[in-house]
Image 1 (tube, rainbow, N blue to C red):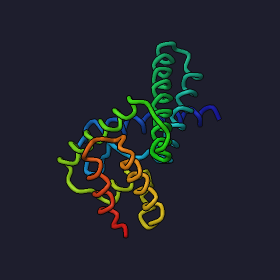
Image 2: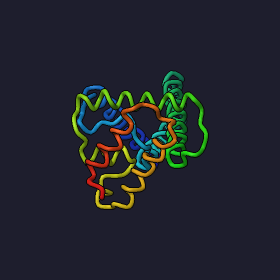
Image 3: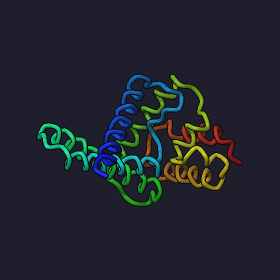
Length: 179
């Protein structure tokens, strides 16, 4: 069992590194998004990574490796809680949130605008990712409409002041051909 757990740790570590390297080497992939609703799949990957990195901290005896894994663990925890908070804000937009979150969301929309200028129109995959839905949800118009309604209600609050946010909603709806 110990060997299997170590194997899973190594597979998870290499998977995370491969995603990181792919993102660095191909920053303008047509399906890449910067502004999106965090999806359950993202949380599964994050919690699994946190678990296996914690396992790595327990298994390694060398202090420098444990320190590096501990730093990665803390960063993942903070990122996970930030994503949970952002998902909560988007789902229940009536909740007040700090100005720095508002600036973070506005900055993400501005960066998405720069990315969209280079990558072109939205594909179905990219639109589903923005809504926080898996690719098999392209046939489920109820989930798509709920996701679009969340974005529209967030726009209605005026907390995201970047003018490109309306374009993101419009391109997402067009890519998914909602009725």
